[in-house]
Image (cartoon, rainbow, N blue to C red; front, side, top):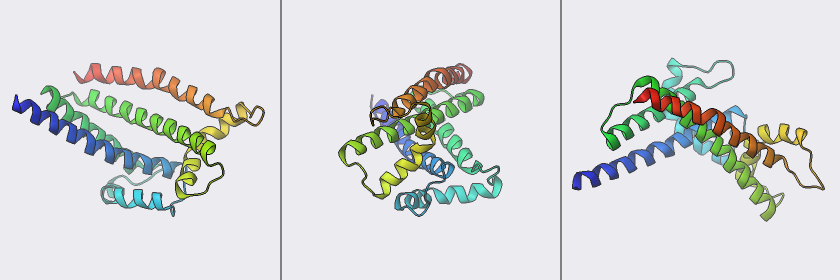
Length: 193
């Protein structure tokens, strides 16, 4: 019985530590992709927190085509390690590498979609509470959400001064979860076992 408590605690610790660092690396990747202000204090924090492993990876996988491949490799590697350790700790089984890779990609896609949903939702709340406020966080929120909200605004212009583009983006992101991420995760689970 005590062994179960210990493995549960260890599983929780592994999931938490890996999830937090994967979130930091993913945010860094997304902010680089949308070309957010690197001098922003929040961007600086992300750069400092994620730079050591990325500096090592850039020696082997430099950026190409405007994509930071070392960031992608680090995200997939960390997610794969997290899922591998979770499988060993929770079920005592080793997951097959091909399934593990697909599951990792699906989980990272899910995380990115949830980040965009959270950013847009937070931006909506901030626009109600304190419209037009300027601080480092609101700038990053705007820079991160604008690549999705901008095209949605062109498709669905404001009605009576109310911006409905977030609704369109939420529908698109939810459909992406249902039609893209879930099938990929199901295929990964089938291959992993």
